[in-house]
Length: 209
Image (cartoon, rainbow, N blue to C red; front, side):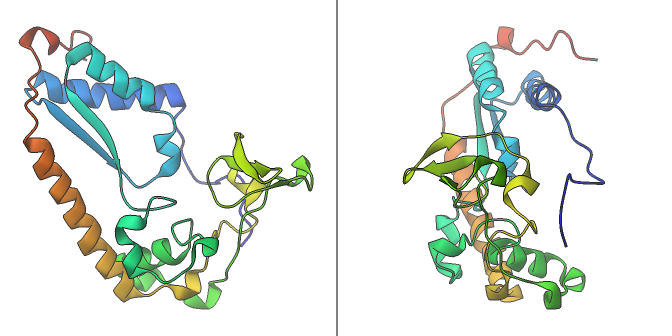
C-alpha cells in the first residue's frame, strides 16, 4: 500500500547513532579488541558514519570498517544469483534481492499476491527536468547523475517498492545467504591477518558509564 512517513518506526538522530557506534567500538577497544567490523544491510545508516569511523581510527589506531552486505547498488557479489537487468534495480526495496531474502528467512510472512513492480521518480516538486534511477540520494539532471538531495522515501517512491519482486524466489534467497555469509567470513579471515594493535594508552574509555 501507499507508504508515508514510516509510522511505527523509532529513529535515532545522526548524532545519537554516531554516539552509539562510537561507544560500542570504544567498549570493545577498552576490553582488548584491535579490529572492529560493523556489518549493516541498511544504506541510510551508512550515510552518517564516516566521521565517527575516522575518529575511532585517528584516536586509537584501531582498524575499523563498515561492511555493507550485498544490496542496493552494491549487489555484484551475488549478482549471478539474480536475473533482473540493472534497469529493474534488483538490489533495492522489495525488489528481487530483498524479496528473495525475506522469503528464505520467513516464508510464512510472504504474500506474493500483493507483489507488484514499481520504480522511483524524482520528487514531483522538482519538476520534469529531474529524474531518479533508484533509492540512492542521487537525482539526474541533463543526463548526469551528480546531484545529492536529502529526500524522504515517500517523495520518490509511491509504494516503497523499488524493483521487480515478481522475479524473487525462496531458493534465490537461500543462495544469497550462503554466498553473502561466506564472503563476510572470508573478509573476516583477511582482517585477522592485519598487523594492527591499539596502544594501551589509547584504550582508555574514560567517560564510560
